[in-house]
Image (cartoon, rainbow, N blue to C red):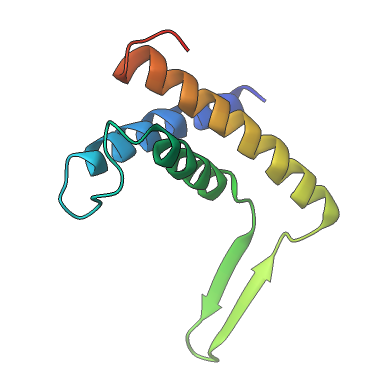
Length: 102
């Protein structure tokens, strides 16, 4: 459990920092420091990607893509990990990047 939380915390720091860096580029004009709702949506999407728990493997010799780990239990863990990731990411953003009260 400890390594899972530390991994989630590290991903939250990385995701928040990447989103903050994207705000400063010309390639994502809709995501800026002034677009709080879009920032929240972007954070939720990135949290979902970080929490995604299926495994993909591709055999280039046969051309077969195998997806494993898609079970009802995995979906439940995904929802839980998504919420945890989003909370950590949002908390880190407000505490360390934006430095404001939530």
